[in-house]
Image 1 (spheres, rainbow, N blue to C red):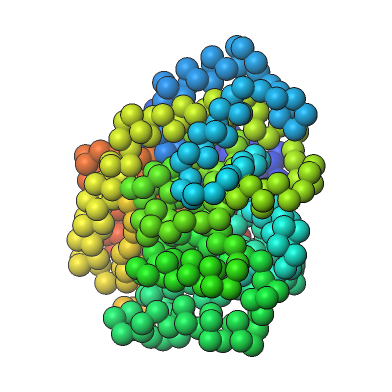
Image 2: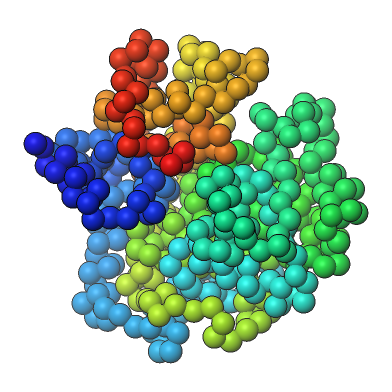
Length: 447
């Protein structure tokens, strides 16, 4: 038995299924750049970056040096009760990176879930208004408050807070209003003001609108130009907080440091997590001081904002700028889109290709005219790509979108390799070379 198989059996025996979202039996042993090796020494090209975490790649020497230097000096400090220089320096740096001509403050946590949970708590307290508007397809986290804010099937098994109202996201390929993008005049935006505010959710009782600048887990959906600007305008008109969740696409992935910067809007608060510390557990909310200072000691965690994670975040920001990773994300993202559109011309089951920078989605359908989702085909393509040496996951409320979020350090050769493997995977699945029984233990989002 191979070592990867032995580890898989040990994993089954010891690790809770509740924390598993598995698409294939890959066991990570080591990594460098955009490449990972399994326990048997086989190398894979990773086009997931571990759900968008490894923006600077695996084992970047700058991250290793920063973590080693900090851990040798001060391995831990609980920021909730003691001060430490590194967490203060990171907070000061984050305040300069988030736009807005107003006084800001920074909150620290461990993940996107606890960061969104913080907003679920603090918005009603700070504004005196209990309701929060979010969007269908959104993924804000796994804690109960962030569950309630989410509009993804992964969070539909539990009933969250009754103060959340979910709006249609501008998913133009599957418009819930059956409009055409070229002629709809952003009907989904007018729907909020003309119907939701009039009949469902009084803006006088609403504290905030929380939105993802690009909706990743909802299907890598990029909003049409004008939509985010329209949301910001509504918030200013009705005195709502405009809050943007950048947990997955922040820190350079869209070609800008934050995704919302592509549309030149200015949020009242920005939620960040996954890639900000290159794999160290750290999240943050940066926003208006009056919002973040609305309560004392009401949402804190003993190890949040610890100096080692903050040192990794400072190094991550430095690397993103010094190595021009935003420029690379923009350039390689456009190149990858063009290559994937070539595959769309070749395979009828690819219904749509979309993306912004290096967050890219390929939506698979049973037939292009009806646009019926093809989740089983998607799972087969994922599994066959893994067998051929390419790692990525799926997304979307129908589990039918191939999601590509590679490290921002990838080059053109690696993009070509990924598309070549994907091409072979399509051909092999169409040719019946993938046995569906191999997927029985790897249902992904359908678990």
